[in-house]
Image 1 (cartoon, rainbow, N blue to C red):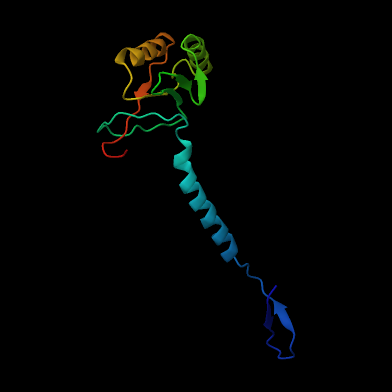
Image 2 (image 1 turned 180 degrees about the vertical axis):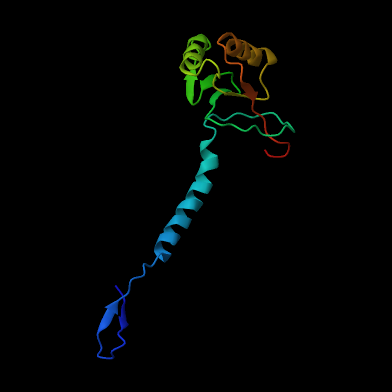
Length: 144
């Protein structure tokens, strides 16, 4: 606690009633920088070589379900690996957990080297489960 000289001049000091917020601001700025650096690293857990597109990014109001198909054809729902036989049951659970009037948003991330039929089989399963709000995830040209 800092002491200020009193006006009476006897050497007694009155307590200062101001709080020093500089250390708080320093800590908050360091945390902000840490979150800004780590947040982009947390968006995609499955490495997928996405195709290029000049489309505008979508606005997502809630966290979407991410379905990824990697270069070898392995399926992932969020970061959990699934077999193709387990996919319909998992999609049914996802569809039933959401609101019937507004099904959850699904982001489909597929490697650019995959067979078109493989991607369409997954999209067919999404449609069969009633998950019709599907967005195909791409990257901007030159962003690789």
